[in-house]
Length: 222
Image (cartoon, rainbow, N blue to C red; front, top):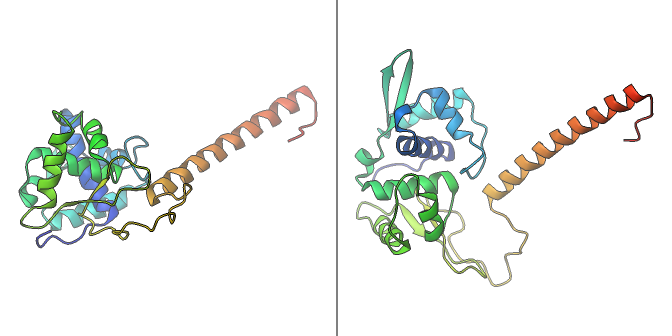
């Protein structure tokens, strides 16, 4: 990947959000720090789900600025931030869109990438997506994506970005080694978030039942 160092997960999230919002909400771009944090912490179109603070986002912006991947400008009362992926990586806008989806959603098949990219770019067909992925993988200055080994039972191979370095599991698992209950780190994070949400909802329901029982003068069996 040329001389660009491997990015941290938070750096890829911030960079992905800036690239996404440039195309989906151009009137609000470049982004303020508040808008960027909201984009990083979205519950939709993100894998894994994160809880990024303003301080963390600001520190990440500063590190990306040192790599020339982010620029800062003054607009109104707040600083605004824009990405400079095209200037640093020298790749076409279609390739930036695919990288953006991979940074925000994790490994995807070409079909999933085409659907997820619709708001940013309308690829004619899956073959078009695959052509840009192949170009990114064979980039002379260093590959930016790679095709992952096909999972058992899967019809398509997934692709992942290499901005954070090569994935740890870059070889196919032996037959039968991956159980149906094995989940990726992103899936585990999403499950934990769902469990926390359900626990909060349950606590709220218990409190409501307790208040109703108290008002009716009956004992709370919970």
